[in-house]
Amino acid sequence: MNGIPSSTYFSAPPDWGWLIVLYFFFGGLAGGCYFLASLIDLFGRPEDRPLSHLGYYIPFPCVLLSGLLLILDLQRPLRFWHMLIESNTYRPMFKYWSPMSIGSWALLIFGIFAFISFMGALADAKRIPWASWRNVHPPSLLGRFIAAIGGIFGFYVAGYTGVLLAVTNRPIWSDTPLLGMLFIVSAGSISAALMILLAHKSRLNMPGILDLHRTDIWLIVLEFIVLIALVISLGPVLRAWLSGWGLFLFIVVIVGQLLPLALSWRPQWLGDRNMKTTAALILVGGFLLRLVIVFSAEGV
Amino acid sequence: MAEPMGFYTDTTVCIGCKACEVACKEWNQLPSTNGGVNTLSGDSYDNTRQLDGIHWRHVKFIEQFTEDRKDGRWLLMSDVCKHCVQAACLEVCPTNAIVRTEFDTVVIQSDACNGCRDCIAACPFGVIEINPVSGTAQKCTLCYDRMQGGLEPACSKACPTQSIQFGTISELKGRAQKRVEQLHQIGEKRAYLYGADEKMLGGLNSFYLLVDKPEVYGLPPDPKMPTRNLISGTMFSFLGALLVGLIGIFNFRNRGANAREEARL
Image 1 (tube, rainbow over the protein chains, first blue to last red):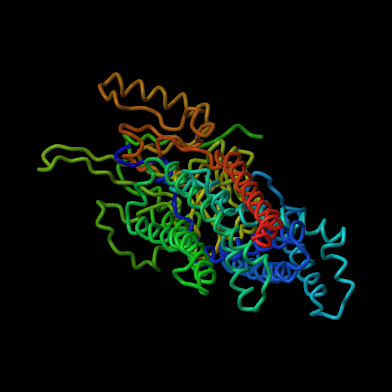
Image 2: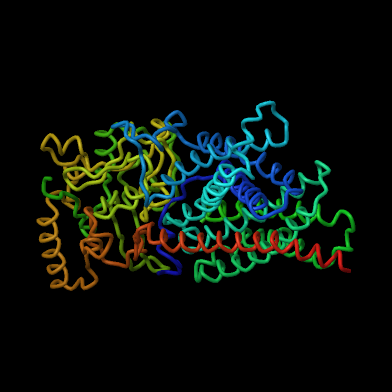
């Protein structure tokens, strides 16, 4: 092919830039935090409930921000509703084979769950006077049901973005089926990291934080394995990363994955600051990972 | 539905006059580049550079010359949307702005498009771009408005050498096959049809006669549908979700045992 590694090299870049990188990051945080919060509620102990509250406070603002970022990214922002309602017929617009179409609905539905759980967590923590909202928060049966279903939608929002990139004809994005998996695992790791940082800032002290830290380290190991598999799956297209972007990705792996793993292996290096530093590195690494993936394909 | 219509472009008779580009711009009232203050690209006689939201036709100039330029040839090709039978853009469009017409062509309805740009990333030929005037994705419509009025598209009407031919797909395929055979008989054995075969995205309703490899003309040798990754990508994502869930459950459920162990120590 005259030295061109894939037929995907003949497509045009869609100019998805900073707004989309930010959406991928905040969307990942929204979905991941909700999932972790519901996990703590469904499988943790009652004393960890303040930690799950923290997890539920994050998704709703992140979903609002995500929606705003996506609307601003449209060339015709006032037509954002065309994603949900077919503009010619005013019927619901849904294409199950188009990740962007399903994602639009998933974000809307997850937004409703995020709002309900946000209010439920506030009521459970007695931060708002409307006690009736506690009924939608675990441990009530309804609360458990909402947490479980919302967690599934949260995961979907965190991961569909990777599938969306794969369902194109752009180099890198569509040359591997593993981007969705990478984004889901990364959503878990950055969300655990953010919850750890906010728990420290809120001076929360409970055993669940240590569990969250341990979960985070496992997730970083998994993320590293998935990233290696992704690099291998690219085959000849890997040449696209034989550039400044490849070097950047290498730095991201060191900062966002290997350094946190080293810190968890030798916690005495930073003493009290170890957990916070690890979490901060994972959070920064997760953002930069999305940045590399979006911009490196845009530049081919 | 009317019989499928399209273009057959015989690149061997294109003279690079760009009448097709001008006719397309005129009929579709497409704006000029940079308000008419275009700079020279330095790439042969190609100052259009690419297909995009305001260039729905693009004449490519490919110079194949020896170092000393004593021997060589020009490859000229008027590129356009392929109006694929299995259209990637139409498949991913989340607003149904992209439709298939009664002529089996693919058209973007500008009033329904919100500029999400998913179709741009999906098109394997790099045909679609945003038109900065409308703020919507745009490309060749195969002059849908002219066809509805019984007229042929502006570009093929303007082509002075019949490099661009318009007609029913079945008729065009027959004509193109005869031309390939004719070229083979006179010694141009490299001639072949690109996209006339149904194996390529179900067939391209705008197909080409080429005399070199597709990539020499800037065409993908093996264009694919974007949804080829949908099932595998979803399954791997599901696996990722499962693993994250298991890691979370394992760590949170295991905590009780750890706590007991710590108390014992």
